[in-house]
Image (cartoon, rainbow, N blue to C red):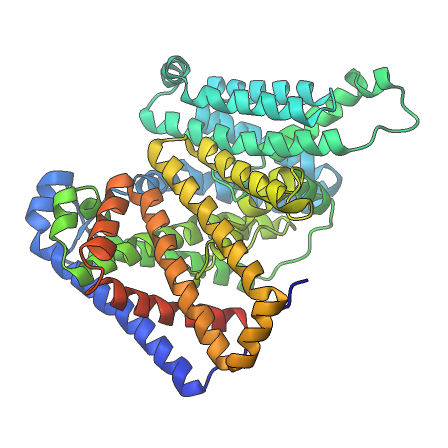
Length: 504
């Protein structure tokens, strides 16, 4: 039997010190990274061709984050206008054709996808939908998974990649098709498994249930779900169960104040992201091992924080803009990512960053494979397969394999420690020897060590193996006595802020 821990508040002066240290360390490390960026601006410009800045007068802009540049370009070219068009069509449908709202969404999504991806791109997606639906008629989750993984693997076949590039008018359009297909695969898996788990109607024969009479409505619902325009290209992910339940609800009136405040919030996030790549050339620096070796230690810390913070702000923009439209349609989108600076565990990172993907993994992989209710071994296997699928879905590159492995180990170690410290003998000893406040400080210290490895895993994901290797070498190997201890001390302060945030 395990015992539950109860966290207590720390003295106000102590928490204020943690907040000040956390905030000031962020600012100072960012300043050191900015200073390094300006000192090496000429050589960085030659290496990556910095763009002329527009947000800050006299500053150049680092354009080397592919995802940010890609979605910005598509937004100004067409996506922004198609999303505005969706909002207008959605309001008109809610007012004049409420009973046909799903059909309107499906039609608008298909037309928008055809405009942006071309006829061949939509044909490819419809082929994926059709194959997934036909296999789902067998009512076998194993067959549906096999089919989906097979379809997903086609995204990495060189011959098929060349064929799809031939359909597209530009490399950017090919990548838009690639991203759309990958996200669409998650929706196909969701729909197929929900269909497999749904019991057969008692008044229908097996032949009739699998016949054309049932197939056409299912294909219509799958098309509406997969081509729902706000979530079509990049998510966030909503399970089919959530989508189908919420789309039937009547649309509530939304005030213009709410809409304008949401737009303003997304615009502020966008400005913050642009400010970061004008002020710090972190992506250009992390792509070059020479600069990573040259960085002063404070600037190296600033680079690690800047990379993960930019990733966070980027997804506030990407998810925040479409989530506003989803709410206008009467649906409840997944919660926006939580700030990475108050994440102090691998488990918390997965649970609170991409909430839609986390819920998807829990529902369709972790729980069906046993999860935490069928023994330790089943839990280890289901967790491993969940991380393995995420790695495979992202492309299964070597750095993603290291990232997934480190996350899996991190989650397992955290769970083992939680069970160990909650066991009756050890729990009783800790309660007798340490005050509640000292217990919390001990938790923050352990969390600081976990956060160090969490940041390392994020650097592997965002920058590749060379960034993680150099960061590990300079902080924990070469600087084990002079750098690692201050780093853990700062991460301890971050963890205390995160714990306090969770206790609100």
